[in-house]
Length: 151
Image (tube, rainbow, N blue to C red; front, side):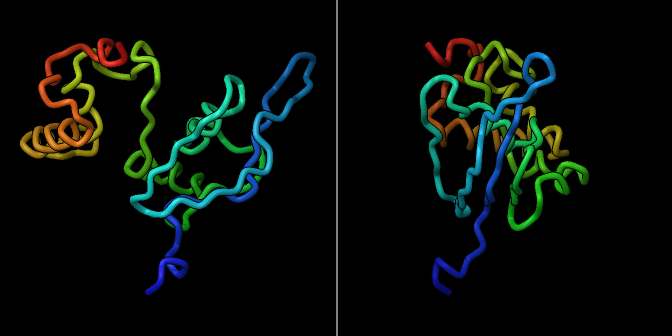
């Protein structure tokens, strides 16, 4: 099977997001974004401050709803995955500011949050935390505070 016949893992089709403004007006933040990402493929979103990077990231993980277009994950609409409670098993979001992290101040506890909430047994959570930290080069940081990671 050649690569072009594979379904993309993530697909954006003419995605747009319009934000509310003053006096009931709206203004577009993102317009007509189309993109395909294959499973295991790495992608970086870069741009100037205010260019829509954070908004796009929040759309991709379901924190915001698109005003236009479709976001598909493995061929399924993101809205369907959210309704079924399946989105959090597929997409994660890591805030750039450690002060905005959702859960715990300690690295291993914060990393363990996801697999714990997905119902993995404690021994599997511990294994996944260790593997994850090794993968991103953070072995030895298990007991450190998340806030020191960006310094």
